[in-house]
Every structure is written in structure tokens, then in C-alpha cells.
Image (cartoon, rainbow, N blue to C red; front, side, top):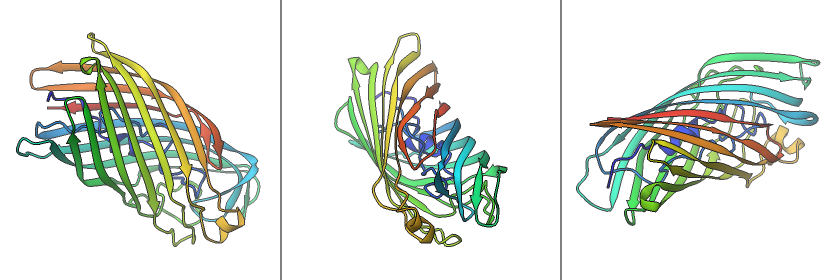
Length: 314
């Protein structure tokens, strides 16, 4: 099996600026940013893959809707601008030839967020704005297992874990953390066509949150599917489409969530993507860019997320 420019599913997953979850109008994921090239495939060649991602998101919820805030309380409407720069290290284990391969990974993310509300219920009223920059919630996957049904069909299984490592202050509007642990059992699938030049990859996961005891807020479980289709050309360029669907399958709970009837959210997004792959003896690098438009959005920020990623294999 040839070595591929693997961009692990978690790289895209953590590129979603999730500092402002259901408690804040957004879940761990941003719609469509979790779709990952070769999501089901870990190549058999052992060694390190290094990757970085930059994500930008500008979204808002209208003032006609109350939004629970991560720092406590609620707002009438919310507008946010988020940037996330993440660095991922993935190590492919050395194994005997078989239909299974394994890897482990860790992601170190840094975030910048600007939030504003027209009216906040609680100790503040009127227009409130806040911004913050720093370490965001780290993520890791102890084991990613990939099974190869054939040269063209692959599946991966993993449990991604998010730790509340970002800064949190009660009452602060722009907190750089979800302030809970999140566990995401994830299945990735990759199907290759046309001698490997046409790729379809899909990632399916459920995000399970622990309770935020500072605000007595429990985010409900979120189901998501992200998918991409890419045609790679002999020149090294690739073009395609990417999409995502997020559906909260449980109500949020707690005094604030109960007052908002569970605050269940959903979102759909579609958009184009482009890649460029450069190979040399002993290594390769792949760049990828995507832009999406969100629609059919309820109880979440609505905007147009964009992401640039680069992965280096040596």
C-alpha cells in the first residue's frame, strides 16, 4: 500500500473552534470542518506525520433568541469571530504485515476569539464585547485502529478525548475552553476509485460531554457526519466538495438549559475544497483548503467556516 498524505480526522476535528459550545451557541464541531482526507486509512509505513491547521469562523445568532453562555448566564443574540491554529503530531506504529494498522496522536491548539452580545441577562445589560487569545482545549487519541478491506476500502476506529486545558473565568464572555471533558467515539471510512485518484472519505462521530459544574450546564450528545469527495490530478492539484451535518440528539440540561427548552441545535453545510500534493524522495507535503456555507441552522451560530491545513510525512 502506498504512503499517503494522511491528514488525521482529529486534525480537522480540533480545527473546529469549539470554545463556545451548545453552552455558547456552538458544539465541539463546526459544520463540515471535521471531514478529513483518508479518514479511514492509516498507512502501514511507521513514523511521524506532522500537521497544522488554521480555521476561521464568523457566525451569529439573531437577537430574537436567548443563548446560554460558557461563563454563565444568557444573552439575547450572539456574534462571534473565531480563529484557531492547531499543531498535530501523529505516530504510526510499527507492526507486522496485516490488514490492521495503528496510530496515536495529540493536538495542541491555540485560539483567538471575539464575542459580542446586544443584551445580556444577569449582571450585565446593553452591549457587551470581549476577546481572548491563548491555549485552547488539547485533544488526543491513544489508539487509532485502521482496517484495510482492500487496496481501495479502509475503515478507522478511534476515541478522541478533549481536555479542558484552556483558560476559564466565571462571568467572562470569551472563555478559551468548553470547561468540560468531551469524548468522541469516531468511525472513518475511505473509498478510492479510478486507481486511487478519486477519493471519498466520511467521518461519523458522537460527541459526549461531561457536566460544566461551574455553570451547572450539561451539553447533550451531538451526532455528526462529515464527508468529502476529491479528484486528484497528475499535476498534484485536487478539487472536490465537502459537507457536514450536525444534529444534537439529546437536550441540554440544567437550570439555564431547561428554561430554554433544552436548546437542541442542528446545522448543515456544503462547500468546495482544493488540495495540492508535493512529493520527494523520502517524504511529501499536502496542503488543503475548504470553504463552507451553513444553512438549516437552529440554536447554533450560523456562518461560513473556512480552513487551511498542511500535513508533512517524512
